[in-house]
Length: 239
Image 1 (spheres, rainbow, N blue to C red):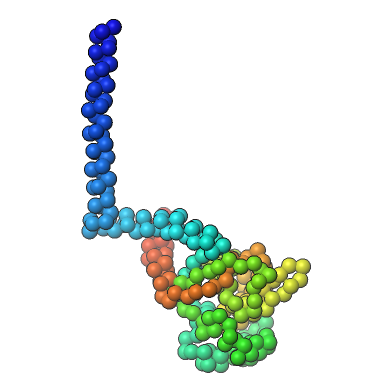
Image 2 (image 1 turned 90 degrees about the horizontal axis):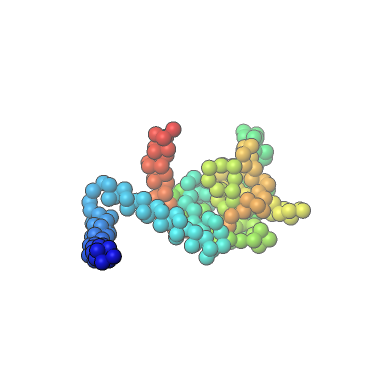
């Protein structure tokens, strides 16, 4: 029994000696990892930083903002030119549009002024709308969640569509039938979109994600470039 007790004590002492060493090795490994992430200039370190930034934004910051702003899309990058006024408001107001059915082109040629007047929106009224001078591809838009009953004509909303990304356009009309439907249009677009995948004359309450409240110019290009030059090429290689 004594020999067994001695062996047990030796094992206990050995474990006690090993424990500080294990702890120190973990600390050294953590310090080495920290230095690699923040101070190493290698390409691998850069890629790890990029991955960590993506994870933190995607799974911590973005959901946190979603809870604060009451929407699953608290921040969106503008990925098209559909809301741009390239040469200023007056030039845009007199630019080309189509006043008629979505498929009608030459016979329905008009300008934006005619289009909006046909939808009971005057120039002076439009100028009172949020983002009356539009916004550009590459901008970041901050969104707040909004109840469908609180949406007003002229506000810029974001809604789900049968496309790879949500649509951010202006509300032109609101139809309150058994359910609420919104009619929207991109300022720069020449007419409603109705292409089989998206019908802007019947955007339902269930599609609504939020309303735009703040514009941050150009910052969205980070996401656009990241998607175009990294995500899409990698996705293509995998397929």
